[in-house]
Length: 475
Image: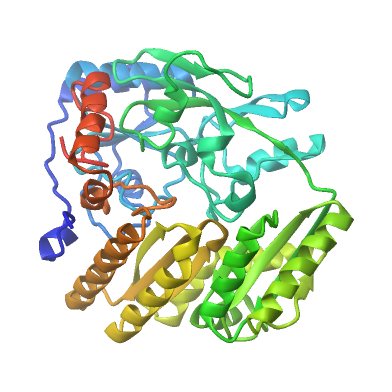
């Protein structure tokens, strides 16, 4: 494995590049104090994400309000060769927005409008700073919705940048499948468009897919056209408890292999269930469980549920507990999305080391069981949840920041987990992205040749290396 497993790996490479006074003066002249801040509190807020890395904050924060603002900022940054780090909601997990080479944070959260809803074509065009919840509120009156749900109320631009997925991905896919077109400001400050509202195209290189998942290293996304879907006629959520994690995972594997079009299927291990009960005031059985959701007509939802219930019984699963009303479903899914906070409450003062991997569905049980055995043997408290319908699961290690050795152990466990995943034909990240934390693992997964092709693309599009430098791979 190329990812280092030592104290050195716990500290990212920080090489601050100079930010000329002339650059900041030019920004101040163009934008004024309403949009440009050098206040320490603002810079520190934009210099932290949900990762465990500590890095000095950016030199300034620019709050863009339009595509022209973004283009002007990037053009000035290119002239002075200053790094630019796009910033949405700050919910990334792998160090994506940290200023490891200094520069400025370009906050697009004020660019949060719905630009057009084309209900007949099942598409919507939005600015990048709009959150997924706000987007769904805006389109609800059309009878449509946007299904990608990574848990956090992330910005759409950030979700594009990390190629996010989430609980609904097993049925609706990821951002890769649901972004039709983009407007992007390139590293030179030029505004380009990729894709159209048409459902498919064979015209030239697929630049849209190039930018989706590029983690802000190739440009700044300023508009996004997304697929929408009709709200299902019927939605039902169910909980099913199991005697073991293996039984729950085997149920999922058989469900997927039988082609049941389940919309959501989440695994929550027994420890995490106990944490959720305390944190969200629930009364779930403190055993491994699957939280499932079925979409369709009333008849198809009933048929799907009966099929999965039968499979669950074969593996010792309990009878389903149903949540039919919107309020009941919201309460359950809110609890699931709060798994991290519930786990942190179980160890006050702890800091999480979050990781995710994704394996072919046939290897899911093996990968999860081996991981659990390894983590439990380490003695490090943890929680495990997963969008297991598509082979993706998450492990959070709860470490005491005052005990450096716990960080070392957690990183070693993460190292072993990724190695296991790659041996099983999987990927080092199903949805978090590479950022800082998984740069070495990308080399293990893709190989030196493929990573060099990525570097070549980066050098061609961003020869001054100003777009979120130091992420995905070293230059």
